[in-house]
Image (tube, chains in turn brown, yellow):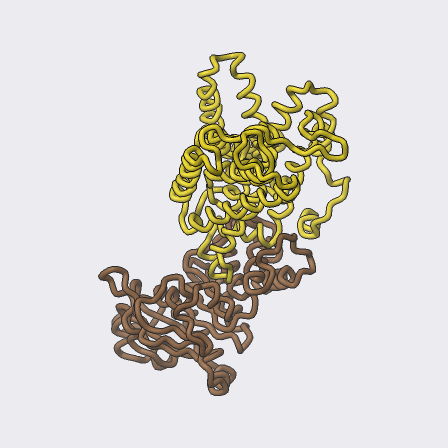
Length: 263
Length: 356
């Protein structure tokens, strides 16, 4: 349930964090995204739902530039970024996590987080070792505390448990000064306890940080989002508040099991 | 705690491993008990080959980019020394002062390496090897057929280091210390920079290029810059190589020798900058003494067999063999732990070379 805090957040911000204009992505003959129009306000929390193959992850890849779009324009924070490479979009305040953890297995947890913080600042080519009081290093330390990984910070990523790797994914996405974060199924494979932890982390994000979350767990998705977008076969099928989506007959029919509630 | 030393970049004498001290003392005292043959043909030559292999180790071990053109880069520096400086062939030999010749040769090699990087970094794995091999072969045939600049098949002879401070630097002892200084300098540079932002970034790109892009890094530029630094290292090694041999010809940079460099780096181990030097010593010793055991023509068979054995029994080279031996000794009976362990006492030790 979005509280009054969330509502005021929506009303106060006129600027759009993300605008997609007729975005399509084809893989050969396969149309993964067809003519998608979507606007996400600054600070808004949006859930993207849909069955497997609905085009949710492709949507993320189009926003970050991991895959270029076939047609259409992508605007971030009012600026057209369609022709910009991924790293330039990231430096403008976009972040993302991946469905399958994409981490640096040969490096320590702290180094992973440090690189994430350094990626959006100056000194990416520095040949000096970072000092303990380096601003990126200090930020990395505090991020690891925020996601409860500070006691394993010197371990190699390959030594972490699955749940810890998911937490690290989130820490990397929170690095720097994010304005819009794309979470790709952050709760997948987590235990119920870890899910609660995740929801707490998401809900306690500062209000100026908006996010888009792909999540199959309705409980997580509807609890953390202000608005919900339903996708089907690469198209946007429905958009509304969590209540509207939950009570929509067509949605019930398609995704929530015929006539049954979620869960 | 380990990490304080890791990130401060400072260390005290007390934290040095005894083996490190023994190695340093041995390397410095080496000329006092070794014969001229051992000082030059074994000592200095190993250090030069090790430095070239170090430039490959840096690209392949930290960056995941296996380049077969590092010898070519060193070879260009060697040729530039002969072309811009003095040689005895009556071709080119512009007679520039030695310091200017060295600077321009190394920079030329580094730019060549940067160019090789620029054309190859968008590829992965086998394709990087193919492109860099193509560059190496093309450059080999080019210098063999070009007589105006590179004096073709004959190449150049009579390339000598300067006499400075009253010392003739081609004499065994001074030349040994010269190569030791250069090799040790680059060894520590690579060792230190592996933990710098640039070095960590390079290793992270090796582990996961796509994620690095999603963290705001320009991975193409990062890799090309790595090629530039590798070019500086290989360039200096090329200068030493031409001073060591006194000559440079297409044979110096042939594909067979380029593969030797790869063998040295792999046999030594690519997880730590000391690996290439261990590999180079093993290679040079085999090259010189295998003929005592076997026909000269059969030398490559010995090298090939040694290479096979090392790769079969220790994918991370002699270095990995040593680490495993030590770990097994430490955690007796815990072979599983020993086999896959990265040496965590050592900040420059990197993780897996395998691509995820």
